[in-house]
Image (cartoon, rainbow, N blue to C red; front, side, top):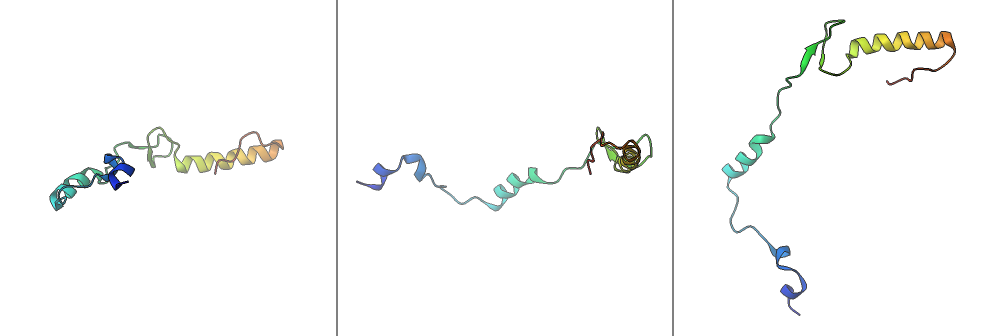
Length: 82
């Protein structure tokens, strides 16, 4: 039994020629880091944040107030997300 009989032809596929440096560079040119376009200022405190996300400064303030309210009420109505 020969090697070609044991393996299908697609398992023996190899490159015919060496990939040049320019071809590799062109392929990796699209993988560079992109600039963020969705950074906006928070309407409450004015610090920069991602659009459609919670502001980190405002969230810490809200989290502190929620915890103080929950300690006074004696329950854990709002979960700690930090």
